[in-house]
Image 1 (cartoon, rainbow, N blue to C red):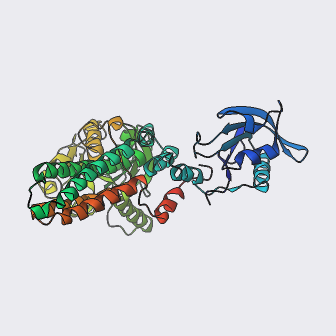
Image 2 (image 1 turned 60 degrees about the horizontal axis):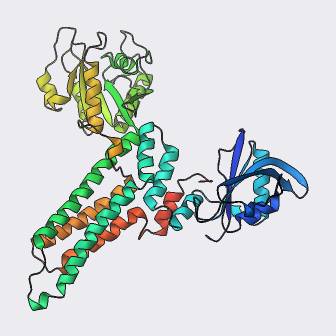
Length: 458
């Protein structure tokens, strides 16, 4: 199948100033020659790589479009195959006709991600770099773009290769020593070897930790504001997003539906949801709102539960806190400008004291402290320098967690002074598991699953 010449629209379909059609494979130049004539009478095959030529696309003797054609000859191309790119005018009629001519002359339509898959199969990039390509395409923020660009440059690939080299050195040393066991020679430097294995274990733990922060930076977080009616949920939302998003009145139950707003905190997209007040009600519409509020709590990464400082804590307040306990929770005691009736000790039975923030939404007190707490819960208190971090995705995390367990099994074998064959088996398994991240020992089903996420033309 990789011997086929493939073609696809590389730009977004629809009306545009310019569209690009990409052809890759051993017949790409020959196919382009059959439908293109340059104004200078030069042939595409005579061009040096990375050169552009001006001319027309023809269907027999009829001009279809005026185009620019660029050529990238193997192996100096994205796929390491001959690539021809046709820059034509935007508009689907011209694009479809040119694609039709290309296919009539021997190409086939590319599958999603097939150009990048060929780049991987032809050794231009590894699997982690291929995944970085789709992350660049899907990047929602400058920070998520930085993460993807870092991985595309090979930072994760190099880290995994370094870890695998350490493992291989340990394996070779143990296996070489096994030959001398019968002679009763003590040649295995156990102390150094155990230190090296511990170092590999720490490397894997650090990579695993990066995944959660990476997902937050790439995809953002969801914060749900919850509480009883009239405790100040809508006022807090308006304060955080700095505009009148929710209606604020003294009448309890004004908010009947979930209201979303997206803001950015240190470049991280944050979706904040104001929910209907949670309480028992006979009103049919309000009951639907309460049900939706509970659903929003279940979907949230962080929950801000608002309590009214001017009232004693109620069973309903406790119930809301209990519903939120499985998530990261911040308790906001609102209306601290009023006489306090709330007992903090009762809240501290359920929530850590450090996660209880006192605010006044109307007086704008404590909002900065709340925002800092949200940041701490999101990416931690330590400064997180994206440029200095290697950040993995969920698929890579699964492989690294599996390799970590295999390393721990090897550590246990050493501790129990088992025969050398036992730790070697586990270390070899970890070596192979880590190979899955960069595309070694990776099954066809996994590869297909990854490249199906791509758009056609990439």
